[in-house]
Length: 384
Ligand code: GLT
Ligand code: MN
Ligand code: MN
Image 1 (cartoon, rainbow, N blue to C red):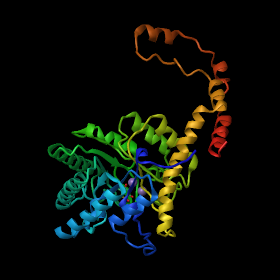
Image 2 (image 1 turned 135 degrees about the horizontal axis):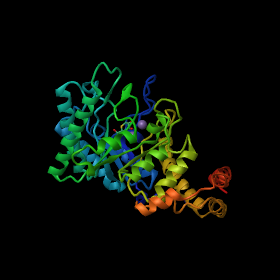
Image 3 (image 1 turned 90 degrees about the horizontal axis):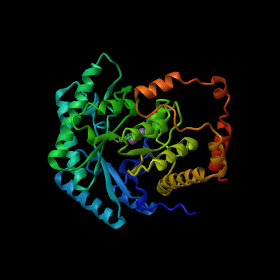
Image 4 (image 1 turned 45 degrees about the vertical axis):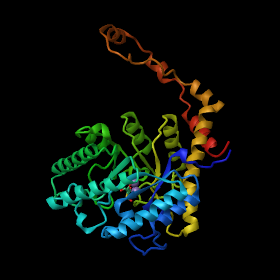
């Protein structure tokens, strides 16, 4: 079995991930700043990548002149042509510039809120120019350190107004974007609004064009909140809202690490991939991670390759798990799952269930060999 990614696998990377220069809060960059075209070439070298994603300012610096923008776009397009990569997703940087120090859509300053929507409309224009059909919104600065600063209910109104405005702009321009909102509990704000997948799913239902809006869950973000990412993604799938996914890894209880997918919790990564494959998720799989600060250019390419190969190996393990004789035998030995609560209510069905008698002790004594099942899972993950 060869684990060679192809564009059909829909693996994507961001300009800001492969191009991450290795700066951290304590230290200066350890790698050079590569141009967008140079980053695309690196992804070409990695092989089998479907596409590249960007924030407006990953491609065009915030203060670039029109002439500078035109020349960057020309070089970037040429790199896309020679590598065959597509632009799959676009997003807005509403967190880097000091103007967003107190948020964008939810800032207390009306001019900042207007500027954030203005900047997003222009970033949507840029993404559409390159053919992106997914638009991510990550509200990293939408939050607070102290709740003395803002009314959190009013913040949700402001957030909703901004997203409503932008989904209308999408319709007016005919861009055909599907929006994917991305939750995170903290970093860079002390507390970020809409911190988990569940919060966002409730928020989305209140939007004017809610059918066009889904979620972009990220492994590390749910793990930072101490949650089970596979369950969060399951809820998004169940709600028909898994429009995009950010794959990476993260030790529980740590700072925002953005490690290579599967590098920290391979068992959790296995159950995630199994879920995505079993439920035929066919959106982009974006590796929102960066190489260790110790990596050089060659090792960054290994990091990109490794991310894709880990996914493919886990997908293969999921197939082997589903076909495994011992797994099948264990599952077959468990209590029957069919039936239970009638799918539709009727007075007759209710009367039957109401009158039914249960042998509680006998039911409680049924065997659930989950230890054996989990051990078999670990063995499959270990290759046999
Ligand atoms: C930023 C953040 C990510 C988001 C990106 C989209 S940018 O690096 O850490 O999780 O997906 O804005
Ligand atoms: Mn992250
Ligand atoms: Mn992300």
